[in-house]
Image (cartoon, rainbow, N blue to C red; front, side, top):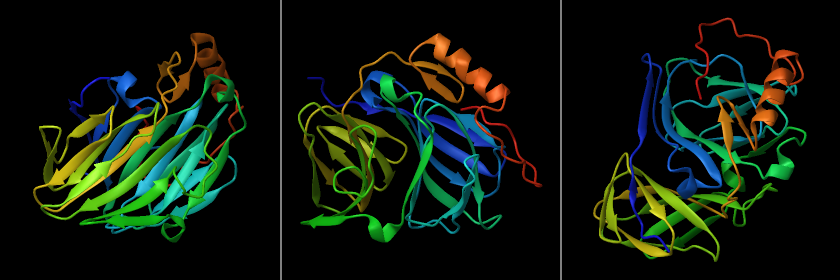
Length: 275
């Protein structure tokens, strides 16, 4: 069993309208997650773009000044409101697009890529959504948690994975518990604390291979990700995450020939995705 370690982020900025701290490596410690971006966005910066082979998940924190419009080539156009979740199960391929409802207002959230098992890479795409009031809450001595997905949250997930947003009072402790066969990581959203002898501060992530206690030195908010690793081959090419190169080539061909559907461009400036 590996000991916990701090994972450093990759920082991204696109103009003045988008900035993020993202975690993509080491993949073995993130599995079944492929990528997580803790982002702030105030304007549309991404053009409509494809995904295949995984789930693209957006969660907005409750302090977001604006919600997000999510469009997809399945014909959907939905608003993601602060505290809400939008899960796009891309499967064999879908084109989607997200941008702030209110231009110039700050969006604060998580963009999460969750891998699909090899036998589900080519399944039909689908969309799942949860409003804040549908997410279970729990609390302990000095801490409160919202179960965004996984656990007892109301989504039929393709693979065991979970996200909880946890607020811990200064001086209090929160027990991070992993089931047998699970691993995970915790992103520090704001505040500071310590766990397993390691200092926790904003912009860091703590890998989790065993249950442990997190202590808050000041009011602390964590995004705690857990799941059962897939431990399968991963071949990634931009917005496609497949099991082998042949599947990637086939996904590119489906996209180029319209097999993932179509999504009209928006009338305001955007930039292309480089996920």
